[in-house]
Image 1 (cartoon, rainbow, N blue to C red):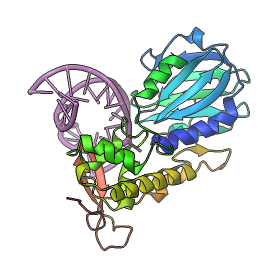
Image 2: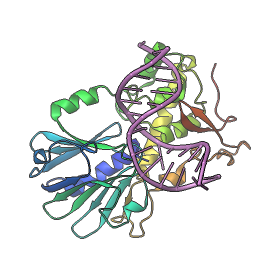
Image 3: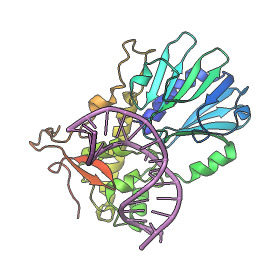
Length: 287
DNA sequence: CTATCTGTTCTGAC
DNA sequence: TGTCAGAACAGATA
């Protein structure tokens, strides 16, 4: 489930494993998945990693960058020279299968024979080779990071004034308003904030927005704490899944008892074409 | 078997 | 300008 916490976790895991290494080889399945010229990348040293919204950036020494978006089913799986793995993104058997396999879209080889695989079942994800300047322009279009100073109740109130009729869920998932919130963490945040996802943002007060800011941060922090859905056998040789899915309250839990013990059941509806889970007893519709 | 669902984002029609 | 359906693709699930 590659949302902000998943990408953040992959970034942190890869940081200690590939920074300083030189990319010695690269293969890919199509120039839709990999958009760039291999010679811009081969022979280059990795000098750093960053995350913005749900996008991962691998910085190279020649001021070029590998920019990854995992979309719905993308995965990054690193296999070290001693065969130990770090896998993140969409959880599937590919994390532990022989690689490359039929879902492998890109393979990077490093100078110590470790490898990084970009797997993506549905092929929505991509990797682009871009300059620092091109990336700056792309990142400019995104809203503030949820853990940055700019993510405040005042900011959200101002943005909401311009589109008061927008429902809360679609507002929070708009990457140009806030960077990095996807379907799962949205539903979980609104459950914590006790607000219905259908609430029109124009009806929310500064106090409501503060509740939302706190809830979003709490849920994302929890996601990062449990490593998102990232898996590593550096940590656990059993190949345990990242722990976050065990801590979801409403997502994919339709017809189950509300975790707050209100005697209600978690329900499902569709908002903006997306499955949306909530408890109508705990979450209030503001008017 | 068929029908429906899926974690994201972009585009084009209205 | 805001909103919405549809598309990109390959499954898994009922």
